[in-house]
Amino acid sequence: MKSYKDYTQLILKINGQIRKVIVSPNDTLLHVLREKLGLTGAKPGCENGDCGACTVLMDGKPVKSCIILAVEAEGHEITTIEGLKDTPIQRAFVEESAFQCGYCTPGFIMNCHAMLNTIPDADYDTIKEWLSSNICRCTGYEEIKKAVKKAQKIAGGL
Image: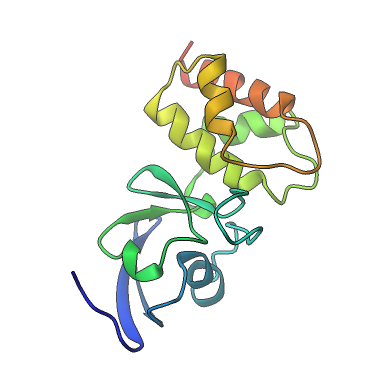
């Protein structure tokens, strides 16, 4: 295991690009993405892993970037909302108006994108379980569930 005692340069693979960044050992991935790399799609919310607004993908799996240290991301493929381009879940969120203020939307989209890649034919209970890791304070979750079902149809999952 590597030990980090002072500022260090990391080489991170983010959205398919190699990025070099100087970090403190205690910098979270969320902080580095937003403040050092200008990728502001992942949002700070609770900053303790509860709300999901900061969700990104690490090797295709959703993680809360507020509780991952940037040094832990080295050697992994990180995908942020900025790295998704016209995916079925993004289109479905728009078509189903599955957002209100939009603050939580990137986290939901990242989580739903990972779910659809992992379980393309997810049933209602599975969708509900995956959505439980993200919180929206503005709207109900019905439109988000409808967006997931629509994305399944767009992608050919059902």
